[in-house]
Image (cartoon, rainbow, N blue to C red; front, side, top):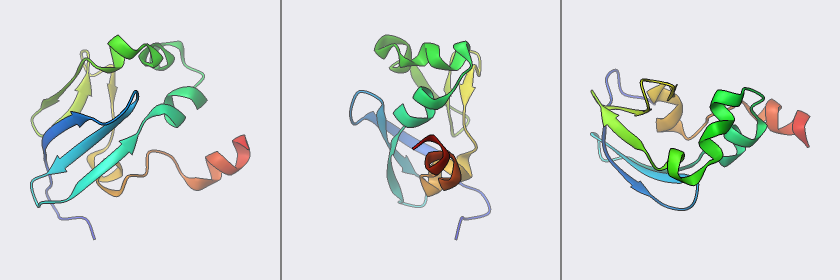
Length: 93
């Protein structure tokens, strides 16, 4: 169950496009962003397949963001390590 209010407290790079996220309730998730970035058709999102662009993340107000909120994700999805529904992966396969 997701707490009513949750914040990211720490982010570490854990691979080319994977980040280890620490949340304020002690939960830690390693999230692989590569499938999301690869399957996206939007050029502004695919631009983050560039390792330098991807590595320019930051925590702002407990959320993980890139640029001027060019790329951000609902914190509940990051907490559950579910960037996309399973159906998207099944359809892509």
